[in-house]
Image (cartoon, rainbow, N blue to C red):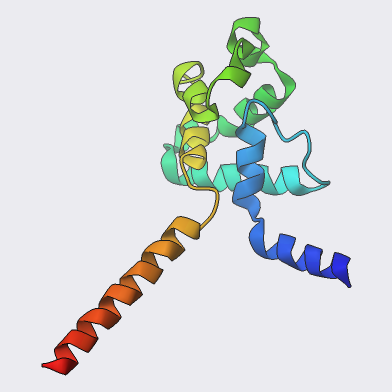
Length: 140
């Protein structure tokens, strides 16, 4: 029963964007994702790339994802990986890897908040303010 509840919570809270963020984080690179989650993350990277990049740039994304994960091409250079654990992942992409197309996609994904809690708080505050306005109007 408990494991079922944990699985339900996981399925409600974790989505392909989280897998994509894990994949492009230079400290994780998708190493701890469950089977198949890396593929879901890659598919999400492709969706974001389709929106953010030009058609001729979009085609290069899969090559860059493969090279990033295999530490080949641009990512074969030791200097790229120096001090990566000492900086924010988005800073790493924007500062060290900014000449890659994957950088645009990774930076966009890593810029998003990890949860919707901030948005939910904003709506909650708005509803309290809105209700107080209604009360003050009804009293006059």
